[in-house]
Image (cartoon, rainbow, N blue to C red; front, side, top):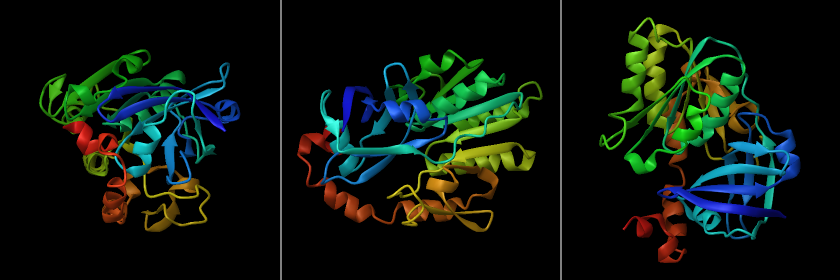
Length: 283
């Protein structure tokens, strides 16, 4: 069993869970993830390991409540235990010294970006972090990122915090200024955002890495649910990724596969008590 040490709401529908998992905490490396299973009725959910404390034997996960299983997960209280937790899984981030690196996070993707940006800074890169959200409420980890970023640039769609607009607007400015153009870009977030970043860096031949979040079941490459096309070849995000060369990713296919079970997910949400559904909490 894997006890929940704490469960805190840090943004609308986004929870920070600290889980007791000493072996995972000791073995994990930046970019890796775990698959968690709240109970017998829920699906297995892949989540990036945002941080780990080897002394306490804990790992930190950020969960956005969007479907039946994630809503069940964030409804669990401190002291309860997950049914199971498998990991660390996936290939660790390949940490190199590039010089200036732009780390871009959209929404809850910022939680995935956090360990990558921290590791890149640790080897001597100048990390410029760009994070975005719909409103100021959806901006997460800004203070934590300032600890190792030379700059943390914030965008919101309504202008309630930072610059009004999208993360790509800030990236465009960086690329356009020879004094700030990055030698590498890491982007994590919604598929349209990652694609827009990729389209912007491709003409300048800036190395760009994205972390993909396709449908995933077993985390071992056996089910084939997380298959993606990269450079015209089929890859499995759970064992070949989750990080890939963005300029080689087929984003259209990725977006299409992510919508495969949308109707089933909507039906499952109706099984939850109304107060646990994201739409009900939004009202």
